[in-house]
Length: 398
Ligand SMILES: Nc1nc2c(ncn2[C@@H]2O[C@H](COP(=O)(O)OP(=O)(O)OP(=O)(O)O)[C@@H](O)[C@H]2O)c(=O)[nH]1
Ligand SMILES: [Mg+2]
Image (cartoon, rainbow, N blue to C red; front, top):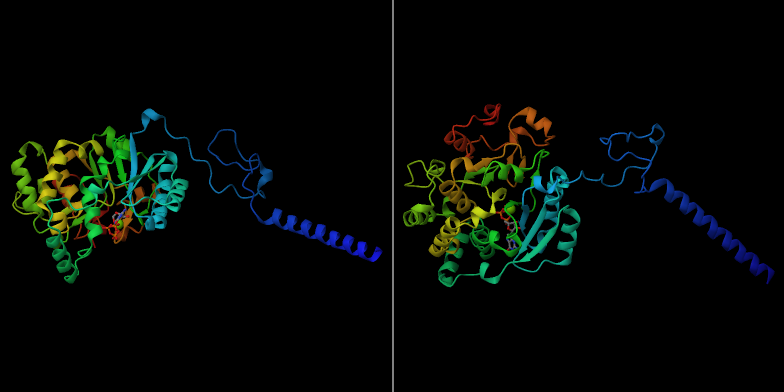
């Protein structure tokens, strides 16, 4: 009996000793998030200089508190918007994190996610944790993501098979066509988008290279801009052989929608007879939702949609939006953001001008900047608008 109780006492002592060791190890190696009173988390605040005695303190919590959002009257009525599948979650997480770190952590704009299938919990949990504004998740109505009744589906299928054989990028894809049609004509009419005036489109897998030291939404609003871009290029002809015919038909039927001071010369080198295939790359866009919801744009989309090229060819939302902006907006309503460093495979927009890149803490290589290279249309945009190209552009031409 005595030997037995001695053994229990020994076990107890071992257990207490073990717990003490564990406690000691954990105190010295795991950073404690709550260091309030020890570490100065916001050195810019007056009178909050860190005391000298704390250089050995635990690291600051995972993220210093964001600055307070600007007052409501200084903010635009705007949202980020992303069309995505559940399987895009980790790639959109990467994009969101960069948008937040470079801009939105100081502004807390909302984010609308749209999908042709219901978003799952992982998608919602992950993105809500990353976005500093409110998040909204919308299901796309069936009639916005299916064949309209005037489309001959057999004909569309044959086109896909043919484009697949010719190895045209996404040429054989049904979902890609629904996606392009949705981005061209419907995302801005989703009920979740109705409450906003401006949108900023964000795709999975992008990079933002520089701090955004101003509010682009407010810039758009205050300067009456309706469409903006960072990259432009030539479209693959095989995807849009009859798009321009369709556009010309629309222009003839609706001359009232064509702006007087338009940017036709961005699109055409022969006064509108043919399309030169220049377009703004729509995976990045900041734009005016009320313009997209206007009669002019909706008439334009309906006219193109009835001609069938979203399914009988493979019209992309980039040329569709760009042609609309160039024809229906005044030239000074379209804006190029040099300051926003951006990447979507395979093109980079790295701001031209060393001082800009340094001031904005950019991490892109200026040699990768696509803007002044032969396959970009951005030089044409500058020339058409009689704008001076940013200093240093000559060094980035090849
Ligand atoms: N819900 C949904 N979203 C889609 C679908 N296909 C594409 N998207 C989204 O639509 C946007 C454009 O699609 P992408 O696949 O990026 O098209 P892309 O930019 O031309 O081509 P990539 O070079 O592959 O990026 C992205 O935000 C996608 O997440 C789809 O079938 N369903
Ligand atoms: Mg993409």
